Length: 285
Ligand code: GLU
Image 1 (tube, rainbow, N blue to C red):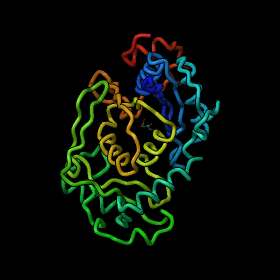
Image 2 (image 1 turned 120 degrees about the horizontal axis):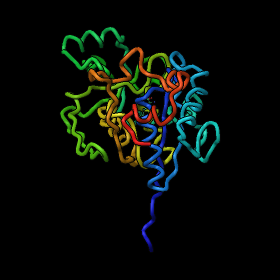
Image 3 (image 1 turned 180 degrees about the horizontal axis):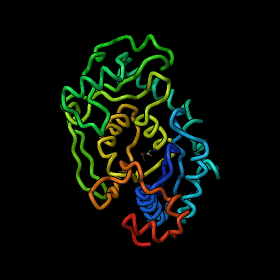
Image 4 (image 1 turned 60 degrees about the vertical axis):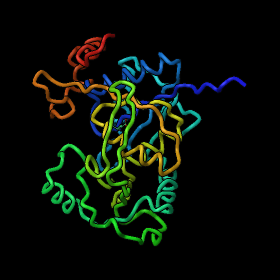
């Protein structure tokens, strides 16, 4: 029997929380290029989970800006596909199912600490301010997870294997290694305001949509280590990872961190052509 060849499936996963900028152009262009080099399928997933931060008009702007850059996808909210729906706001049942599995296996626990409690403890421990603060473990010993039939009302955290090394080979950046409990702590899976956390939603969707390679910015490297733990806990097959270099300005500041981050929309309105945007993103057209 010939070995079954698994067809490349990649994805673009923008969040409609702001206009796409030059850094997104870089990541999405590379994602599209890798899918095309592998003669694979490219999916567009609208990561509109957080009702407080996402705006409907930005969803249309996202599609338009991507098309203007000649980035094409063949599955997505606008064109459908075998793993629809492709907008996270319509996929709650998938996340609830995963939450239930994690609850039943003791992988997660309910947490009633406020954001302020966690931030204060993390500040005292001098944590990386760019990242989710290291959780001090206050609610870790709770054993009442099975009293909850739905995730609502409290935060839910993943109980990480303290001290364990989480390693993976990045397709672009090579071997990566993180230590659970040092580089990151018990992280959020579900928020008290009843929004599934990014870490859970992205794993559930990448697995359900049969994504074989995740292409995204290097700012998410540490999140990949967290997500590998979720894949393991849910018994799901892990995709490959390709983390793109971040675009920085002349003084080395990450574009996404600048308030005036160059949006593709504004550049286009001021007369730029796609080639110029891609050049500013450090790419050859
Ligand atoms: N929606 C996420 C973002 O815009 C994408 C994360 C990912 O690609 O995993 O940052």
